[in-house]
Image 1 (cartoon, one colour):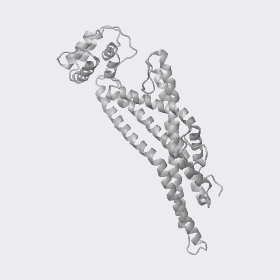
Image 2 (cartoon, rainbow, N blue to C red; image 1 turned 90 degrees about the horizontal axis):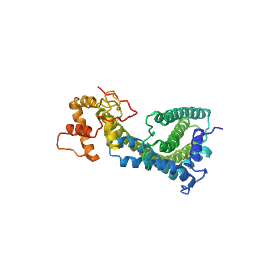
Image 3 (cartoon, helix red, strand yellow; image 1 turned 90 degrees about the vertical axis):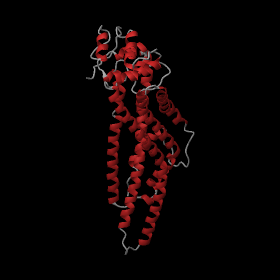
Image 4 (cartoon, helix red, strand yellow; image 1 turned 120 degrees about the vertical axis):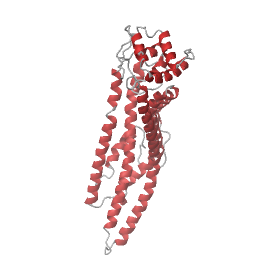
Amino acid sequence: MDYDRIRPVRYLTGLLKWWRLWPRKDAVSKPDWTNWQGYALHVPFTWLFVVLLWVEAIRSRDIQHTADVLLICLTTTALGGKMINNWKYAHVAQGILTEWSTCDLFELRSQQEVDMWRFEHRRFSRVFMFYCLCSAGVIPFIVIQPLFDIPNQLPFWMWTPFDWRQPALFWYPFIYQAITIPVTCMCNITMDAVNWYMMLHLSLCLRVLGQRLGKLQHDDKDLREKFLELVQLHRRLKQQALGIECFISKSTFTQILVSSLIICFTIYSMQMVSVCSLGFPFGYNPVDSCLESRPAGLARICSHDELLIGHDHGNHAAHHIWQRGHRFCKYAERLHVQFRLAGYELSNASPSSDVYGVLKSSGVLKSRWLFPYWFTFVH
């Protein structure tokens, strides 16, 4: 019957062709490694973004910061692996789609089969639209929210050869990420949806095969011809299943592996929040701030208990933190190690007294540094 059997996936492959992640021609027998337009499109954005994220993760000296960077770093790395998989095996999937849409063996021969195809296509379209809204809907929040931070922050941490915190240089990496994030998101969504449809269509063909076998009657005149045709259809579906497995298995394995690693890093970050938030705001890591610059990092440590640095209450704040007792002593052990790495000369006294001595001797407690942060002590 006259019905486009692969209608939903035509839009998806059209998008992938525009992103140079799918063969431009329907009949392709081997991968096209001379896809210079695809390289020119994805190397400056996706691959360079992956490299900058990995450099930031490798150069990081704080394990929590490294875990935060690896969350997006592993996701974009998996996307790069799926891109290579598409460049290598997309011609196999395209050949199967062409056969599904043109071969008479896969033609729909009853209104019941057409209704089943339409119902599954509508359900696939709804699921895909919901997936797009959930995935692409967070992009504006990711890109716009950092603009309201003081000082401004990038949507994702990445290494740059210059100090992007300077106002004159901030907009270059920000615009780069504002372009790269939607590109990588759309490519990832579309490639995942094509994989889903390949498995969906194969399952529909197997359901049609079962329905046709169930309708065979022993008194049919063309029983032998119909049965042999169904055997041929089943044999062809098994061959196509191997091709779909070749196309999907590697990208699916990469996705599962990366997802498991992301879950591990997420759990670790959640555990670190309870440790790093001892007397500090949620999500703020004072150890990493100490390494940014000595006076600035130390000043941020003393800027708690509803106190903005710039007032002459530094001694009171230090005394307030000192009386935290066991909580501060446990955190002081970590700061003690970071101060030694930063080059401070410490005595052999206890970590708590060493940290207090560094705060007092560096003049931070009485400085008039003005920071755009209001920190509230977590009681």
